[in-house]
Length: 254
Ligand code: ATP
Ligand code: MG
Image (cartoon, rainbow, N blue to C red; front, side, top):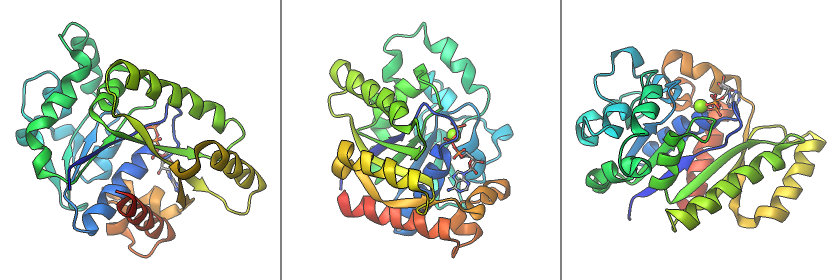
């Protein structure tokens, strides 16, 4: 199996990008897959949620992007998650500024990943909720994009911006980039709006709309404060089981 590099992106904030990265990574690891999580968000939530102390990072994605460290030396193993993490903290915001002057600045992550690809089955990239140079590095390195979304009234409009961005990047820099999956998060199957948005998504995206939905689950929200993916925090919670099912759907399609 060749390494699947997947960016988890949506420029809308708080839709479950980081929750999806952490819990999908733990679920894929549970299935015996070798997984690398890359935290491209200066908020460092995927780092913390994987049980890695973001204040103590010596090298992480910042040093890698600036060519000061190799990925293999910068990764930290998440014991709680069973996967590796290329960590981030606030300093990453500075990389944005420093990168602007560098040559091939949007190719940095892609090039840095090349030497370690044989070590992993999946690379999951947590993007910040903005189209910055950091997100661009994620989308240039990736072949697939997973888009977590909440089924709200304006959800489709929000997603069409991302679809346009993906198309532009495909045409200009990364011809293999495509939307791999739309994942409905914080999903309430009883709400009529959820059902209406689902119908629109099916019409628009067909098979790209994953069947698995992620319900609102208190355990998913609590787990990061313990530095644990939900699988390690409460293996039987409905949110945990939903992410295990999402991993299975992804594996079945890979
Ligand atoms: P940002 O755009 O700020 O990076 P995000 O898209 O990464 O946000 P998350 O951080 O994953 O979103 O989730 C936002 C908040 O919602 C968090 O507090 C998280 O714990 C909570 N959350 C995410 N998914 C669920 C869920 N299925 N059930 C309950 N809470 C959830
Ligand atoms: Mg996030």
